[in-house]
Length: 93
Image (cartoon, rainbow, N blue to C red; front, side):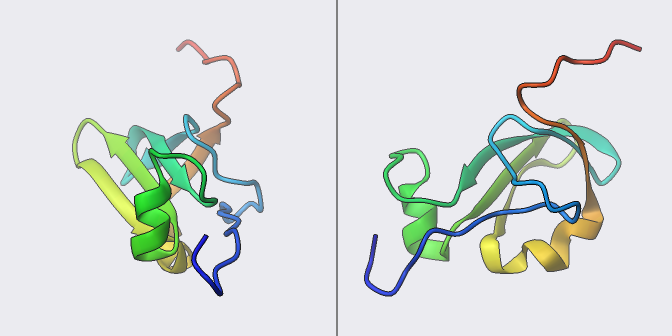
């Protein structure tokens, strides 16, 4: 990790930690956290940490992919709603 950077804890407004695979509503559409970049050591997320200090990538069928920098999550969280954790069973309608 670059000097002066410490791991970032990415959290929803509810206080739960944001994890890859979590299900969300993004602008009212079903979506998923495609990646949660919070700690160096994962080649999939290291670049996002080095460039932006971490953040999350949300994917949905309407908007596509949206990256939100760690420092902007609090400003952006009114556009998404936590639905369930990645390891929770899906609820059928």
